[in-house]
Structure formats: structure tokens, C-alpha cells
Amino acid sequence: MILFDYARRNIRLHWFRSFLAVIGIVIGVVAISSMGVLGNSLVLSISDSLTTVGDTIVVYPQSGAGPMGGGGGGTTSFQITQRQVDQITRAVGTNLVIPVHTGADRVIMGKENQAVSLYGMDPADIPEILELEDGIFLRSTTGAMAGKRLAEEFDLNVGSTVVIGEDGERVRIVGILKERGIGFDINPDYALVVSDRWFESTYGEEGYNMVVVKVEDLEEIDAVKTAIEDALNRRTDVVTVLDTRAILQTILDAFNNISTFTTAIGGISLIVAGVSILNVMMMSVTERTREIGIIRSIGAKRREVMRIFLYEALVLGLIGAGIGGVLSFGGAFLAVSVMLQSTTYLFVPSSLVYILYGMLFGIGTSLLSGLYPAWRAANLNPIEALRHD
Image 1 (cartoon, rainbow, N blue to C red):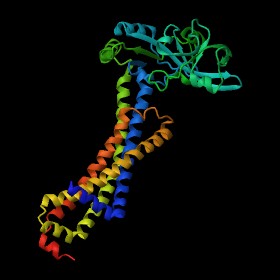
Image 2 (image 1 turned 90 degrees about the horizontal axis):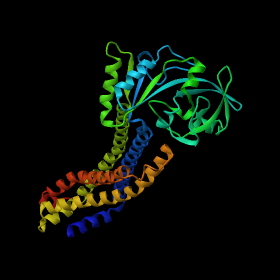
Image 3 (image 1 turned 120 degrees about the horizontal axis):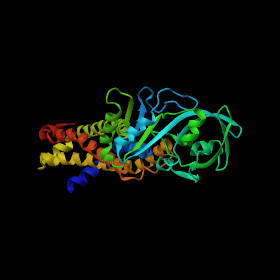
Image 4 (image 1 turned 90 degrees about the vertical axis):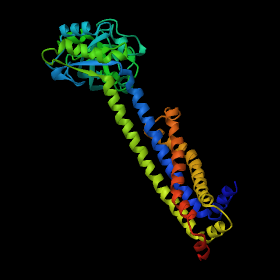
């Protein structure tokens, strides 16, 4: 305890130099904690936006693979036939199979004439893949449902009428869909959803642009994917089968790497702070050489001298980490608010733990930076130290 009090006294006597070292630790802790919290919040945000399709397998025609396959106003000759849909249904067993027409057309909404994405599905399948915000789900071949963002942008409500296509097909909006976010199958937020029969009669479509398979048991995704490929791609590749869980994991891994990178950038400032503490401690050893000689001459052991300087580094680290931890929360709050427009993910344990990591890293950096000066002070020759002027 005497050695710790002695260390605190030395810090107090050289308060300005110690203050500058503490500022370095504070900046480092704030940087590494804020970047860590921001990165983790970003990963959680992306994960929540995408996990709704993590149980999905999407089948595209081989030469029209991808969500931009045509249909409607932009048709393509590469489609999945009803026979292939039946093959997929048999291959996946009890899992839900949803064939989907996709396309785009000019739509008049009020005074606006815009190109809008269209999805054609069996009305019975729509509640299985989409949620209702207002109105009702489609129950017949007439009517349409509007995506939440499309409805907001063009002031569409239940009962509104839109005009689709060059022939001026008037369609009544019967329901508004809940916002769904980014998806690997369909993205209805800025789209209209119509019945498959209406789509087929309007655009002369017979095949489908994609088939969505909702897998009941996530453990069976690989087996279901293999079954589809075996059924349709036995002789030649006629469809592309995408496992959205694998895509989701790839995206999350990429964002985790980004999070790690941003945290490492914050860690650089702590390294700079460590160099600052090293400099402060080395100066302290040089200035107090004679004092160290006196301490050693009255019986202080090497390890006790070393502990004095390590205690000084520890106190600097504790003060800097404590202040930095408090400021980190404010910095993280500001960063998350600006980048994500929400602080929902700030208060989860996996985000807040980065503040603890930053504080521990700050304390550890301080101790490591004080290790060499402490060793040097402990190993000074007492006689030579007493002669030092």
C-alpha cells in the first residue's frame, strides 16, 4: 500500500505530464470502443434485416439466374415451367413451394407515371411469405397489394386505383404490405403484388421467373437444396439453386470483418497512447534517478522499485480507461445515431461489451508501456544513481 501511495504522489507531482498521458488513453479507449459498438450494431442491423429469408431456397432458370430475371414488361424466354415446379414440389416433400412471376411495367398512380416492379403469385401463397399492414390479402384474380414504401411514396391507400401497362388495366389496391426489408427472393417494398392468373392473362406468361422454397427445418436446407438439384439438374444444369442462408452468412462474415477492421483502426490510437505513456515513464525514470538511488540505498528491493513504476502506469491506465469508458458510451451513441438512425442495437450486451474491451485494452496498454521503464528503474546501479545530478 505504501508503494501504491508513493506512485500516486509521483503522478500528482508531475500532474501535467500525467494528464497528457491520460488524455491519450482516453482518446484510444473512446476510439476503439465506439468503433467496436458501431461495427457490432451494423452487423446486428444487417442481420435483422436479412434473417427473415434465412430459411429460404430460391430457384432461378439457369440462363436467367438472379433476382433481375424478367417477366411482365421485361420478359425473358428463360422460365421455370409448371412441370419443373411439380418436380421441385415432389423433391422438397412437405416444405412450401411458391412459384413467382416477376417483372416491371409502367404504372399510373395518381398524377405519377412510374416504372414499378410486379410480382405475380397464387393468392393462397401470399400470406405465407408476406405480412399485411392494412386492408386484406388478395382473394381473387382481381386487385393488387402495394408494398409499404411504394404506398408511402405515392400516397396509396386501401381502395386506391392504379393503372398498369400500356393497355391501361385499372386495378384496385386491396391491401398494404408490411415493410419487409432487403431480401434474396422478392423485394416487395417498392412493388405491386398481383395474382398469378392476372399476371399470366395480362402478359401472356406461362412459366415462372423464380420458385421460392420455405424450409421448415433449417438443418435440412442443404438436403433440400441437393434434392432440387438432383431432380432438375441431373443431365444438364437447367436451374440455379441459391441457399439464402449461405448468402446471408457470407454477408454477415463480410460485415464482421469490417467491424474488426474499424475496431483495429481505433486500436491504433491506443498504441499511440502507449507510446506516450512509455515516454512519460522514461522521462520520470531519468528525472528521478537520484531518488531511485536513495530508495535502493535504504533497503528497497528491485521488485519494489519496479512495482512503484508499474503502479504509476496502472493508475494512469485506470484513470484514462474510466474516463474513456464513460465518454465511449456517448461517442458510440452519436456514431450509431448518425450511421443507423437508431440506437436500438446500442444497448444490447454484444455492443456494450466493446466498451469493456476498450477499457481493458487501455489498462493493458498502460501496463505494457510502463513495463520497460519500471524494469530499467529497478535495475539502476544504486551507487551510480546516487551520483546522478
